[in-house]
Image (tube, rainbow over all chains, first blue to last red; front, side, top):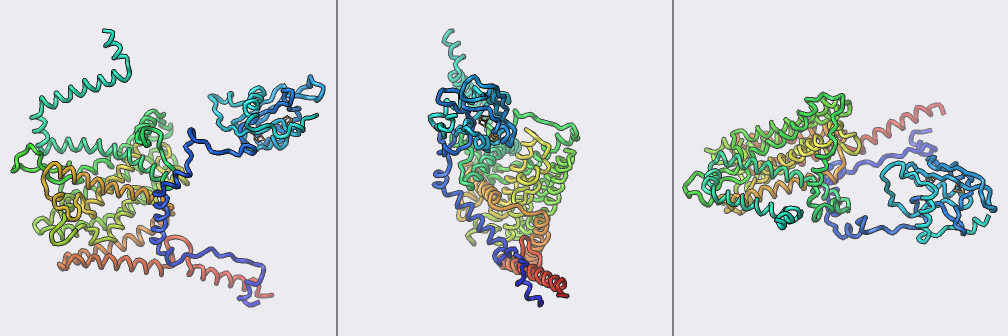
Length: 182
Length: 454
Ligand code: SF4
Ligand code: SF4
């Protein structure tokens, strides 16, 4: 095969783009760069439009899908909806959920969590727990202003997670309450 | 009694009281010692001392606000606002930064050479500051209360014969701070950073020296013959660029535009500023020579860098950009009143500020050089260009040719450099056609060899 045919084979050589004359002179490119930066520097209206002054102005979150702090949903009788199936604990890639399940005092389910801890500092807010839950008991809320003075404070227990539900249920109603008809 | 106690306890009223009492005391002192103060201010020795203190204070404030300006400019370039919380428009931010840095834990790691570790940041800071001694801030002037025939004062801390050489020497002392910092840290990354910085600063000293020499020779040629030896004094350099009846301006930059550009580039590299800041390279390397430093010692390095920027801008302004002169403003250049002196300080300050702004825009616009590119830029382009310009200027002075020939030479050097870079097989960055053609030929040959039997 003649050398000029090498292009016809399945071997494909991709060349990096070469420098043009202007690029090799370097100075024109530098001045092009200055033009861009100076344009941004003096375009005040772009700044004013884009910048959100955080504590006073808040950006619009898409509340249905935003992944912030977790909550444990309550069912229609106000009990914790979780059935302690450990699906979320298994699915969690950060291993930050810790559940202790026990036999439930209620007729409509076998188990319920006596302890349900999430380490909010270890969590990567991936939403896998929400995906895994068969009864939609655990959900991520659009709440992200999360502060604590110690690491221990950032481990949210069952009460705290239920409290998050009470605080966010108006903003983001429980996705699918029907599913917990048991 | 109760009223006084209430006032003292009240935070605002007590502050006001203190300020009033202090102001009254200071005013009385001024009025009481007015003659002595006038005498001290009219004596060159004491005036220089007071001026040096004032400049020290001014430069420290300027450095602090340079840092704020840098943050603001970087923010504007990136479509942000920058610091705007502390004080109106964020103007008190430097104060907050300073308090934060002072209160931060100052760690001295266990494995360092203590004495050198403490010495290095101060070294850097001090050498960056002492350069201001020779900068001519305001020319000669008389206070309003001085006799019209009294010897005028010079608004400059020290007027030494070899100011240019002094500035170059002091500038290169900055390398000591960097190398000491890297060495004393006893950390291989810091040491690598220091070596990079030292190699870079020493390399760029050469084009800087060449260009400064060119400017000095030009100034000596422009000055009247009996003052030609003043060319090594910065005030001599500034005096040579005063507006003149014969030409609308005599700034050296108009005779040597390319040399001024080279000086700007070399000054950027000398001050370890982007795009030559791979001594520190915050984004990709771990901070270079000041890896192990924290709190105030780190801040000293930082302040030193900014003070160095101001020094090198002042140097450039004095040598190339006419110091405190403006075109056509003969009043500004020749008047000997205190008001004109203040205006001159304002003009030179404004010029320095423009250069600092340019430094900052450069930093936030251009990507960093690779180290080999940096070295190649110094040795293969800046040094030859500087040499040609210097040789041309020497010939002009030697044969007494008119000075405008240097403009032709400068533009010629620029064109030659462009031609050289276009025909060069090793461009300073990126890939180019000629190399690719060679690569392609080699690839085809290899393919042929592989398929020879098919
Ligand atoms: S969001 Fe992801 S990391 Fe966080 S608890 Fe749920 S599964 Fe674990
Ligand atoms: S997956 Fe849902 S039901 Fe199962 S343990 Fe987790 S929260 Fe409870």
